[in-house]
Image 1 (cartoon, protein in one colour):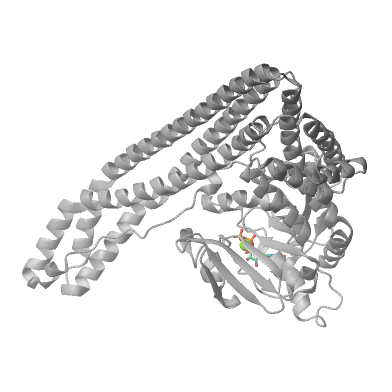
Image 2 (cartoon, rainbow, N blue to C red):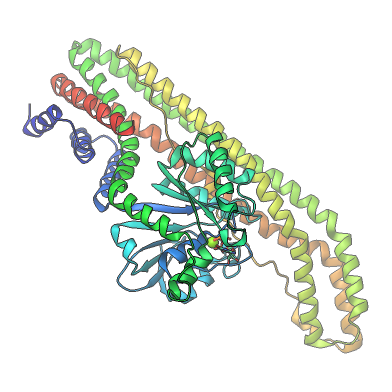
Length: 576
Ligand SMILES: Nc1nc2c(ncn2[C@@H]2O[C@H](COP(=O)(O)OP(=O)(O)OP(=O)(O)O)[C@@H](O)[C@H]2O)c(=O)[nH]1
Ligand SMILES: [Mg+2]
C-alpha cells in the first residue's frame, strides 16, 4: 500500500469531520484521476466550508417588503423599494470596509464598479426593464457589523409578478442558498403562490425563517392572530414549529435612522436580529455542514460504487476481467449513445417550441394588421397640421406605441406558455437522465456482481432558470428622405406607404422577437444539457478509470470501499 493510501486508511478509523471527509474524497478522486466535474465539485464544497460564508436569501412574493427588510437590517436605504414590482436582479450583500456596488454582467463576466446610489439603474424593473443591460448579478459591500460574521445577505426578485423573468431569476439562484428568510405580510397573510413556493423551497433549503411584515398597518391585536393562522398554514406544508417574526420593516428603518424619536415604539426587528445573532454564532456552521454533506454523500456513493467494481475486477482472472472490461466498455458506449439521443430529442423539442412560437407570432401579426391600419387612419385625421421632421417624429412615436401594444402582452403570455412547456420538458428529461444512470448502474453492478446503491442525479436542473429575458426596443425608422418632400406630397405619400407597410413593420418586429426566443432557448438548452451530461459523465468517468487502472489494485480498492463506507455513514449522520 502506498503512503498516501495508508494516510487515507488511517483516517478511516476515526469518525470524519466533514472537512476530513471532503479531503479524503479528494485524495481518493485524485488517486484515480477520474472526473474533472467531480474534482471541481469537491473543491467548491471545500471552499464553501473554508470561507464559512452562509448564503442567506430573502425570498418571497413580490411587494412583501423584502428589499425594505434588508434596508432595515442594514439600517440604511441601500436597496431600491417601491409600490410597483421593483427588484429584478439578484443582489448579494457582503461585509466590506467601505460601501461599494459591483455590477456583474452576463456577457463575458465583465464587472463594473458603480456608486450605491446608482443601484436602481441596474437592479430595478424601471431602471433596467426586462434586464436589457444584461446584468447577471450585483455584489454590494457594506460595513455592517452583522455582515462581518460571514453571511452573504441576498435580495431576490419577488415571485408571482407578471414579470415572469423575475420569478425565474429567483428560482435559478435557489441552489446557492443555504438558509432563507421568507417575507410574508399582513395583506393577505399567505397566498396560493406563496404556499407553493414554500412547499418547493423547503426541500432544497436547510433552514427557513419567516417574517410577517407590515404589522404597522393592522391594529395591535391582529399580528398574533395572523401568526397563529400562519403557523397552521405552514404546518399543512409540513413545516413544524416555524419561526415567525412579526415586524414592520418600514418602522424599523425609521427607528434606526432616528433612534430617539421612536423611543417607546417597537418595530419588532430586535427580536429577529437577536435570533439571527444566535443563529450565526451557534447554528450557521451546522446549516453549512448539512448543505455540504448532502452533496458529499452523493459523491461518496458514486466513488464507492466504482471502487467496489475495482475490488471485483482485482479478484478476476485476466481472461474473465478482459471479458467484463469489454462488456463494460460496450455499456459505457451505449450510455454515451443514449445521452446523445436524449440531446437530439431535447433539441428537437426546442425546435418544436420555436415552430409553435413562430405560428403564434404569425397569427398575432395577421390578426393585428387591419387594426393598426385603422389606428393609422385615425392618426392621420388627428394630425393634419404638422409637417416635416415634427410629423416624422410623431408618426414614429405612434408606430412604436402600436408595435409595442401588439407584442407586449403577447410576449408575457407567450413567456408563460413557454415556461409551462419547459417545466414539463425539464422534469421529463431529468427523469430520462436518471433512468439512463440507473440502467448503467444496474448493468454495471450485475456485470460485476455487486449490490447497487441507488444513485440518482440530484441535478438542480431548472431549464426555466436559464432563460434570460431580453426586451429589444421595437422600432421602425422612417426613410428620412421622405420627410424632405414638399408639404402637399409628404402626408399622402408617407401615410399611403405606411398603410401598405404595416404588415411588413409587424413582420420585421416579429422577426426580432423570434430571434430573441431562439437565443434564449438555445442558451437554456445548452445549460440544461451541460448539467445533465455532467452528472452522467461523473459516473461513467469514474467507472472507466477504475476499470482501466493497473492490475492488482484490488486491495487498494477494498481499503477505499471501507473508507467510503464510513464517509457515507458520516455524511448520512450529519443529515439526520
Ligand atoms: N406599511 C408598510 N409598508 C411597507 C413595509 N415594508 C415595506 N413596505 C412597502 O411595501 C412596498 C414594497 O416594498 P419593497 O421593499 O420594494 O418590496 P419587495 O418585496 O422588495 O418588492 P419586489 O422587489 O418588487 O418583489 C413599498 O411601497 C414599501 O414602502 C412595512 O413594514 N410597512
Ligand atoms: Mg425588492
